[in-house]
Amino acid sequence: MLKSIIISAALLLFCTTLFAQSENFGGFKQVYPIADDPSIGFMSSYIKSEPILFEANPIVRFSIYNNIVKKLNDGKNRAQAYYIAAKPQWRMYTENSLPVKMPSFKVLIGTQQVFRCHDSNLLILSLESGHYSNGQSGCAFSEKYDDASPQCDSIYATINDKTNLTAILNRKNGNFSTDITEIYGNYRFNKLDANYIPCRTHSILAGLTIYHDNFLGLLPFGGYSDADIKIYGRLRFHVGYEYIHTLKKKCLFLKDGARYSLLEKCEIIQGAHPSVNPFRSVTTASLFPFSGSKEFGFFASFITGHDNYNYRFVDSGVMGVVGISFISFPPFTIKK
Image (tube, rainbow, N blue to C red):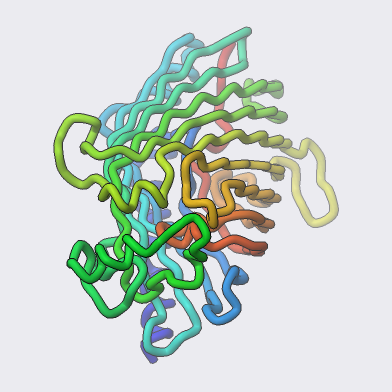
């Protein structure tokens, strides 16, 4: 019964997210070229003893100012957006007693700056900063004690370079908390069709995530503990490539206007505990079959390396995901 309620709630929240971004943004005027997209998908598990049913990412961005569509529609060379992003991440497990454990929450203040290059190519710079945590109170490596208690601190004191963090992780309510800043650059090589809408895109992405101790780098709250940062690692480097192609003719069951994309993203953690696999690779194939709803699609991902679910980055292996997504940067007119 509880699982059914949670599944229904997750689906409702995901659909509400899509509706809010669709209707309130007035025909997708509030687009974001560099973005984690809302998605929900069924996935396999890293840990055999902890089977995952699905993961939901009902991401919402609350626009403060966004003229990206307007400026590019008008043939301008500069555009920008300012916003607040709420990025929850929920996983539902097959366990009856704890179907949802250690959810993630990111709340970030962000800006994206868009520069036109060579008529239709775009250079985008993104800066987001805020807080990342899972809202839990337990010791990260013991279910018996609270976080920051003397007993929890004594457990941290026993951790050395040979400790297997996956084996001792508190998977019930282990606390994860840090302030975070993410810096990305994206260059998009666009080929436009007769209506000046991108029909073929090569997109190159590079970025850096910094875990730090002050909110927005200034205010002294929300950061990590000294013991935790030795396990987290301060820096995460990102690179990615995506190919996007819009079909001009019918292909099998797809009508003209449908499109597909192939995406590869890699991440490397610097400074984490030796038992953590620093590498993560996500290979994703997406299909957007509805020309009238360019933002809605289906995806399948193959993941290898460390996990990305707050403290579960100490886990590593191979995972598969299939689901639906709602992209934040569908094709639109870019006038020369």
